[in-house]
Length: 319
Image (cartoon, rainbow, N blue to C red; front, side, top):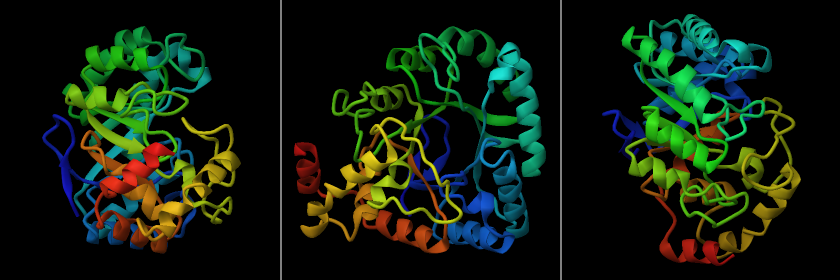
């Protein structure tokens, strides 16, 4: 599988990475055997980055990923996250410290490669978001301290919120990575103004600064499969992020892309979405979660075909 540089970190990551979250759900709700097979299969496919968080099953994803990696004896790049919940907002520093310690314990590791803030960043800082000032004055100093203690190699953000606020934090916070939405329904993280809500070209700006971009929501939470049906392991209710007004609206928008399948540009909508997501050079890796081994194999096969051809991209841009 193709490898790309993760910004200025010096780490190379596979163009497709494995998300251990609750939307796909396998690493939260699957059996131990299924989880170990999935992680082993992903590694065999050449996937090198694995992403988790306490928020995924209240630590279940971290425990399951850590157990699987230990059993497999695998050495891969691992990232986790801290989300500051409403009742913790008065102690951002303490929450970051305790969350990291809990994550390391659940993963069974002394350190991780990447530790990321999981809250949006906006000018208003309305829950669950924080302002740039809170991030820069409270979160960044403790992240720098923890990094100096060897708890993680690099720290990053989840790039949700206001584009100006995100730019300020990226310019001043020393963040090495940013997880940012990018998909067929909203490419405005790369091309500002290309869709609503407008993400203001923050992916392009992050890449310009040498920040490694991890594309998230590349399947719009599953809506780009073109069906509202959900696997038993997957989240049964998915709220859109930077796309339509509802999951059903996103599915309907995905269905309108079927002429591209009929024209032969991809085997199905999922392949179309995956190959679209790996197209921009500004994206280091595209994060995909799965509910089954079959979904994982399908995602890998799609990505190995490479980005979509120019004529397909032109038809998508034309609407």
